[in-house]
Image (spheres, rainbow, N blue to C red):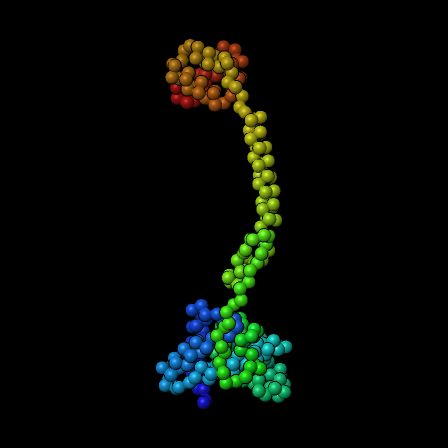
Length: 269
C-alpha cells in the first residue's frame, strides 16, 4: 500500500500519544500498541492496515530520523529551530547535493514530522533484542517484551536490596553529590560571621557609657531662684549630655547659676 503524508503524520502523532501516556519504547513498540494504531488508522481514514504495516512504516521514519541526525552534523550546516530545517549556504548546498542527490529533500526545507520523529526515536529504538533496527526482517511486528529477569543483589548475609530494574534511571540522583564541599564552605562562612558578631559585642561592652556623676542631681536641684520644673528640665538635659554634666558639677556656684539662667532662658523657662 502507499502511505499518504497525512496518514504518516497521523501514525506518528498516535505513537507520540502512546509515549506521552507512559508507554516505554526504549526497546521498541509492543505488538498490542501497533494493533491499536492500526485500528485507529482505519477509524481515521477507512484504510485497513495491519500491525505489520504500521511497524514497517515506523521503520521507514526511523531511517529518516537517522539520516536527519547525521545531516545536522554536516560541516557548514546550521539548524533553524523555527522551521525545523537544516540550512546550508548556496555554495555548500550545490556541491553537497551534486554528490548526494537523495539528501536534497532534507536540506534547506522544513523537515516533515521532525518533532514527532524526535519524540519517538531520539531516546531509544536503537539497541536491545527487540529494537527497531534497520537490519530486522520486514513483515512481522515486534513481539512483546519478554519478562524482565529477576536480579537479586546481596550485600552481606541475607540482606536483599531492590532489583535494579524496579526503579527508572534518575539522572539527578545517579550523579555524585557535591553537597559535602558546599556544606564545608557554608560552615566557614558561618564561623566568620560568628566571630564578627562576637567582636561587635565585645566592642559594645568596652564602650559602655560613662556613669552619671553622683553629685549631678544635688548640684542642679539645690540651686535657688528656679522652679522645680525648670531645674528638672536642666537636669534631664545634663543627663543626656554627660560631658556638660561633668563640667556643670565642677563649676563654682556663681557659674552654675549663670549657666542655668542662660540655658533655661534659651528654652523659655
